Image (cartoon, rainbow, N blue to C red):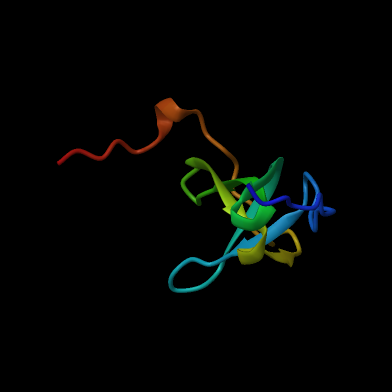
Length: 89
């Protein structure tokens, strides 16, 4: 098993970042540093994105795809899961 060096994190909890999303990058806030879990010991972060309708998505991304960003001008307020649109089909 290859040995990886413990590298300093590029971002910290509370930082705003952009990540790739079609058709343009999206904003998310870092809520947790997961550690060097990606291939080669790359840092992985847990992110939170709140959509305009209040739905909250939490997901993980590797450090290499994240770009530092300012907080977005428009920050929607999270709503309880019971108020999210329920898609049927």
